[in-house]
Image (tube, rainbow, N blue to C red; front, side):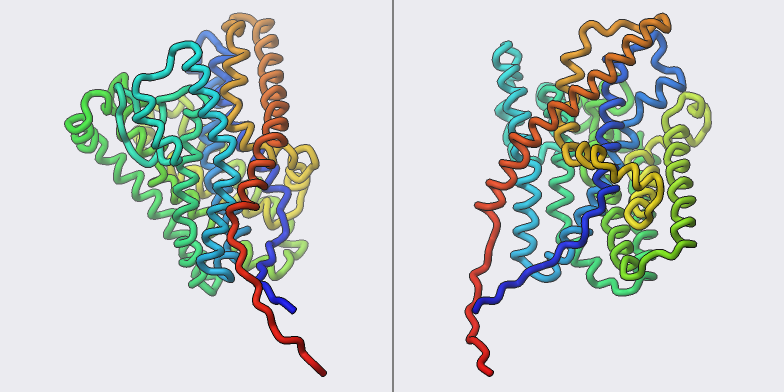
Length: 428
């Protein structure tokens, strides 16, 4: 007779899988707008509102990632210790790396074929191959690491940032395991939100001083105030590095732990109704933050620059955490829509959607005309629908042929399986 330590995974939450698709779709729309639906004046409030959807999509990815990771793997790490941590990292590596590697290899092959391969490729490649290219600020030929390669590798900064989160997660998880009461978890939630906001506000209020140091050390390419802003040190730190973003991930972890504590008791009908209103309020708050953060309408307000910095941390994190919690705990028309079969399927392939969408946008961008009339606007809108459909279609293929087979193969070969211990049979 043999015994083996097993950890029972909690039930899947389909609405959160559907929410992953929403996050990927928001990023896709945001990146496609200037290339597929160009307009004469891209600074109008209506256009900016949609063009900046990635401002919602990326925080949603990070908070949702924290929730899903804590929800699915906390018990494994608690029960299995170091083997559980190792198997967690293997599982996440097997989920992320194969498609990431294919996308980077595809981009470099295309560049090499057209003789456009950057001279600094060999210097940057080790960062990409180790998924650490968003961890460090390094300028190569005047370009930050996250902007060095083509469209698909450029969006992979978030994959590098996620990998940092995964390495930090065992420590976050062990800390959460020390909290037994719901009250202590709520207090931690508040502290995480305040710490994330404080970091970004501190950087924002010392922008000039920090930028001066950056330019003195790295040169004019690191200048946050000027034409090279996208390549600047402060833009990297606030927008792409994992250091402010980890608070969004931690927020998701704490929310998941709170959900697990409350899941022992099913919500009453009164709480279900309250949850519906809370979800609507959280969605409205998210759109309100989005409007205030991005729309030119609010740029004349004195505190606008500081508020805009909050997009990199708790500005979206708090309302999105509320959205995720409500979608996980309550059943209503919104969560049932997110749990629909095709929404869940699109959520399953959301990683491919995210990694491949710029490739599809690039393929469809050439004939897009500036919308100087409503007829052109209709044509460009139809083109946008085709781009979304083509991205989902290609993602279904890569998910089936690359993501899942590679994940199963790597997991089967790398997962640690402890030897079973034989026990003497019990005789009556």
